[in-house]
Amino acid sequence: MNLNPARHPTKLLPIHELYADQLLCLKIGYGLYEPDPGEGEDEVHVGDVGYVFHGRFKRLHNVLTPEDGHPAVEPRFRQVERFADLDEGVLSSESVASERLELEAGGCPISGASVGLCVKVSCNADRGASLFTKYRAKVERSPFPDVLKEHFIKHMYTWFSEAQKQRKPVKNLNDLILITGRVMTGDWATIAFSSRSQEHAASFNIKAVTVNASGTLWGRWSENLTLPKRHGPPRPTPIPDGEEPPYDQCIFIETFRAFDRPWYERLKTAITVKRKDGSRAKQLPKEKSISPTVQSELDLKLPSQDDDLADMPVNSIIHIYARGVQPLNLTGSGVCLWSRSLSSL
Image (cartoon, rainbow, N blue to C red; front, top):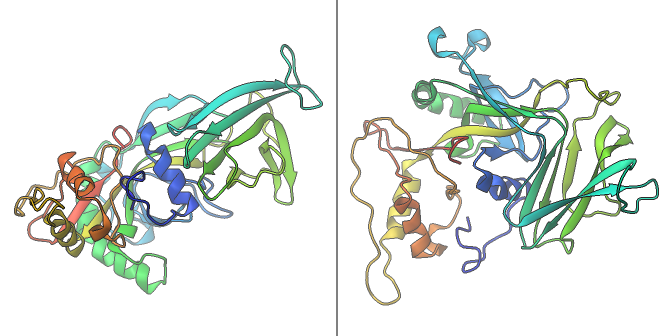
């Protein structure tokens, strides 16, 4: 993973990872590039255990409901609390600016009364992302995140093994995630800017309706746009103005996951490499048994098990530890634990 893009270029991220990475600065949660759960699938719920597949969350089971035969937490810990809603509109990464343009029937910007309203987003860097929402977004969290995390730690190897037997795309332990919070809305649109495209701007008509084979979609992207973009969900007919939509589209999730100890050993090895001037870099302290209180990642995106830590700048690796993102060795389990929270991601 590229912790310092200006100094250390790395391989290009898949577009759904780039989108999520760019929206971390909002400190709302991990952004799902595909908020729609898919045809015939249930919406994302707090307590879900699963994985992210091309920007869409895929559920394996839920730790708050015992109906699927998997162990669930005690009934007294199955509550979900509602928090203040997020307003509708545009949410963008730091590199993206937005402006509203009123449109006449011919598509030319005018002032005063209009038949449409176009939102233009432009990116001033080689990476960026934007999320459009037509309706407010509802925020829900578990009031017992530590209980859910302890339950996840207890059963994660069993669930990981089951996922692999079912041939799910869960290659590493850290591909398995627990959802402790969610942000749900109605209609949405997502777009990501990258160095792979020559386009650095796009327009979205929030008053228009797009009709295709799957149904009607809210809004319309500017024509001949090659940037990766999405909008949904498809509906048989548009929701009339003034009516509430089903709030079943998940745009952000609060997640918890674990990394196998060998990944942490690689991190320690990379930390201790010599600087170019011959001095040694700061080394992580020796592992200790620490109580299962998991610290947040703040706005930092950690490297994955597949990333080459040896290629990282030493200062960037030290930065992981300096920001208070500390691995925990829980009762000698040999597992590193990390969490993302809606308030601090």
